[in-house]
Image 1: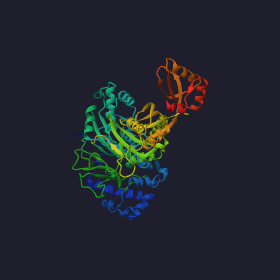
Image 2: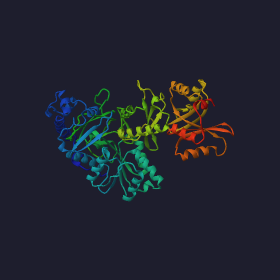
Image 3: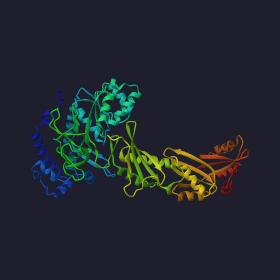
Length: 436
Length: 142
């Protein structure tokens, strides 16, 4: 097979050259990090005050981990390593307890991110001749803009459709003969059902490839998508803290996701003991940015669980591969591709005086899409007897949650005392989606 | 002003009879009752012989229960009896938010209970039009 490649010099780089490049870039990253108030303090604690203190890649182990909580505490400027004048964009995510996190990008950061996404796209065999319909959200969510810039760099015709509005997606696909799409796996399954409903035969569309990501999915789901549409589907991995999409991607051989090791230093650790995991052992992915100027992150604990794939990929790329993501080492939920922490929901509910302190979060599949139900108890003393005020309350809680977690839940009101009590280790999240 | 008891319940089997069990245990007599479906929950409205006691004992059993003013009007149990009342309400621009009725003496007397935005003013207008508004004592003793 003729292996399509965007940047052969980097993608096929010998391991020892790649590791020398990693060391040089790690020093630069530490240099950047030492410009931030957060890392000045954090690194001084372990005696790391100059980039030269990093003698080899093994010295990475002396650097403390960075967590999502650290990002929240450093918000908004504690992790900024450049003058704001140099920053051209930021992406925020809503974070765990209402406190957001932010990643800044210089022009060079955006350029580097775009380059990584271009590599991913080309590795799947997509080309400038393709018509690319981007079905993920634009805006603060990194999925939309990340793929958009990469696809433009490759030279594809980009349709910035964004997410949702399925009938318009179908219209765009038909009118412009879309050949490649980017979406969550659940949305593609939903789209397929909608195509059939509209009397469009999916296998008769010129669609040939899909990039699927933003939510964990099984090999079975991928095969189902491939069969239903008669296309090839490629697994995409990324997270907003590491730019967004473009961290790791499958090539045409689909033997795991190549992680761009010139841009990210990869570790897999035991989330309990924090010790490194052996190859092919499942653990938490820890990433260090190697090329970022504005927001360098050292040993960032992603909370995503995966493992390294052993052996070499037939494509010949030297960048190692991650197995598909197996889950999370924390309680984060992924609802139709959007990351949601139960604590965010709790925060909103606790600010509403008309509801009590007990609540239950239930996630299930409705058709192909996730349905998030938030069940809460009304506070008996504030019940007026008028059901219209309750309907208004339900609506108001739904709006508050939507603006906090970016997902519109189904809010349910229940009788006082009918849900698990707030004390102790009550099970507050019920995920009824099939395991993968 | 007469009152009814509104009770919030989960919309699932076994909740309505939980209310009636409490009322039976406290020898509360139910005159009339309606239930409204609001997807995940329902609101049961009960006209009983002692709404204050009913509200208290339901609340003691953990129910979200509230007293609401209700306008009870006597009408004749014959074709057109209800229409006469509703004509009066319409002419006086009184909007009915929720209502239910029941027959007291078949062929003779029925009671129409309703929630309106301003029950005191509505009671005055209905009485002025020649219809009889039932007081608490009379309604509860039915």
